[in-house]
Image 1 (cartoon, rainbow, N blue to C red):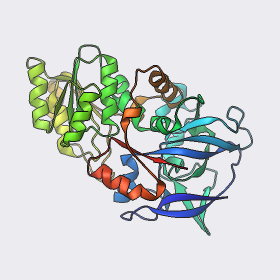
Image 2 (image 1 turned 90 degrees about the vertical axis):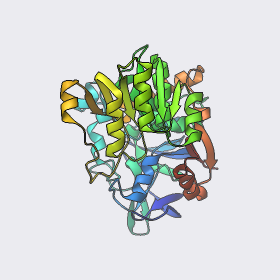
Image 3 (image 1 turned 120 degrees about the horizontal axis):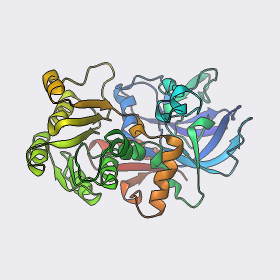
Length: 369
């Protein structure tokens, strides 16, 4: 069948809306008609080339929709089910899945290639294969994806909000709750208050942090951070470091979380310097994969026994945490509605990313008719 999709033909170009051919699902696959897709900064890394991928590519990795067809061997997902796509597939069998680290599933090794091994691409433009971001491609009205990338959710949950729980929400929430291991009464500094950082704020609040210092140069985002649970909001790393030591009587923050859109050495250094002895710095954001983006004082690292660690998907387990956060939302304990600053049609995707770059959105969402 045909599907309209936003395609990036090569790095440096804008998204182009085109009609593609879509193959039906094969064994172990499902076909989804998307209702909504979140507009994550990671997709913009395709445009800048920071994430070297297989072009051309259908963007989008935060999607929620309704199952239209299933392939052979899919027994626990049925036509009509409401689902959220996890940008990380989980096989449930590899070393990482079987030890509680689904976010590191071996199937994720080919995220930037756009399809799983021993399969073929499902999107086509004439004779040309088109890959899908994170083996999904939620910037398309429809997609065929692996069963391992799909989480069934309750039918009463709004799909236009549930879409966000496929990436940005658990990534931010888990970076505080799981990766930084925030405990009641602690002080946390969060560098960058976009679609991930705002959820780090929510995670730190849920974990019981006493002081949550949000850092962002954009005033709109600082205001939003306070609305979502931050106790302080400042514009610069220097202000954050000074405040972290002020509110802790000279000790320093227990942890710092780096969720900026493009990671550079300076922001990681500021995060590192804001933490106390035995403090933890969690790096969540991405930068240019061809560059070294972290440079720190090794003596301070050693003498203060600090920890610097990376975090993928907030150390969350997709098959559990997507449903867990949606249950918190249903019970009024998690803000999803307020995350959506503006909605767009697929045709307006480039405007949506311009708005993101201008700091006008926490999260833009594409809605399909």
